[in-house]
Image (cartoon, rainbow, N blue to C red; front, top):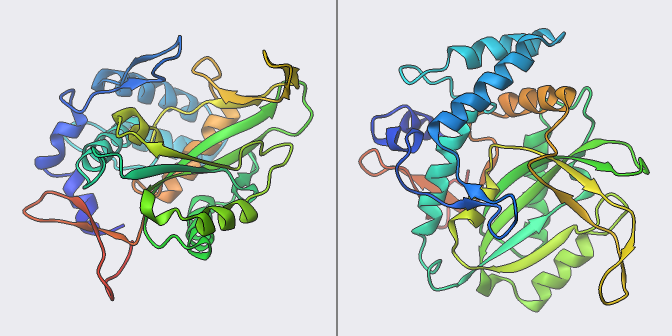
Length: 300
């Protein structure tokens, strides 16, 4: 993204996103492990644990990243894509911006989850440009389906089967916010044709109305990552056989997974998980905002 955006996060104006004022939301709302959104202290603790893991890795790149994150402070932010403190600030800015978009409060937007097979990556020796490649392919996919404007967050996870029926692997998921009027029957049909269900991709496409709740926007750029586990088929209360795939806070990434993901996020940069398709960043008087692009303007 633009140098202006990075400069904004080093500015006095952006300081509030590193602190504990609004916005606030509930993570995993409605679930038994629901909790308030992270505080600045929570992010510092998360960073310290990550630094410890990176610093003891046999990978020289991981140890160097550990030194970069360890040096990150209020006085000098590292702006690494792997830093929990910088990622929390980006997430809070994003939530603040999305909540102010025209039509959000009126329910005129929809949220789309896309979990494509091309988002799969190996835990060991993952391509350094995995996030950029994924972002480019997602933009091609939704453009082909007829969506020319979307705000997209990339959410990395790790998938595994409870009975080991497929190999553990990394998975990139795209969370999109689009105007509901864009999602015609034809667009929905094209998306379904482009995204196929498989043993490792049980729900490649989910489309729901976006109700404007802050935790919905926050999930698109979350800075805590977990393992998603597929469970064996079971019968539900209606007698239908279902196979589930879910994640929860108790399923933290394994050490090797966390190191690999940190290196990927660092390589992608601090804004590598945010895609503005048909939108741009606008900087009036040091305040960075998301705006629609006009014809001929450069997209990011």
